Image (tube, rainbow, N blue to C red):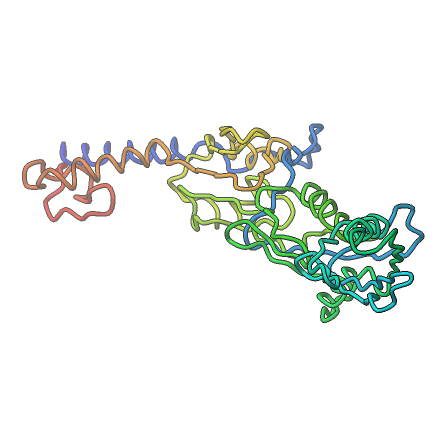
Length: 345
């Protein structure tokens, strides 16, 4: 009789414990609810990274140029000497910036105007001719634009170029040196490219856009079904990322999720999110919008940490024949089956 009473009392306590653990219902609203606070905004502009693909569209706008023409590589010009027609030549500006003049050899012409080059040649030949008269006529010019058009003419997209960002953060474009794009925003990179192209080509403007996004990654680990890195197209909140990761596990502590971000000065910035409150009341205005490279950690609940402690420091370290069974059915917490008799007889 006493034995049956003890067993009944134990079972009753277990039932009461189960009901107390059930706690409040999963959803805490019973009707449609509108929340006044708006959703948080994304706080940091997207930074370009390895794998991103950029599209540059080139716009050539022929118009009168108010400044003197500057000689560039591959320009063809005609140099004529009055009274000395045997010295006349058609010359091409070589890749090293020089032209080849009779009797004098290489003469540097790159970056000069035609008038500057004319004065240079007159001074160069003043020891051979008395008051030499030199005329320079441009035969072919703006060859840089021709080379640029040649570089992009095979593109099926017209006068544009798709350029991927390499793992080292650099990206290659026609005519100019490689540019460091990693860590820069699209407007910042456009400003750099505009300066470099305008130094070489007159009447050229560019449009820069992000064609393929690969670096907008966020990371989640801890007590979720599928911890991993996730590519975000657009924006994503904590709850949306948790959903992509398959949801939280039964061992998760949803009220203290840690989000590690970077502020505008690239300093670590930690915040806590109560996902349980968001999901319970439906107030997603409390949901944080994630930024690029954010790290989300979902911790274990208190009871899960306790179970882990028992598994690591009791089950795995103390022989079971020394402590005997310690749960109602002879089954150890953590899933290890004890083949002894239960403690209650």
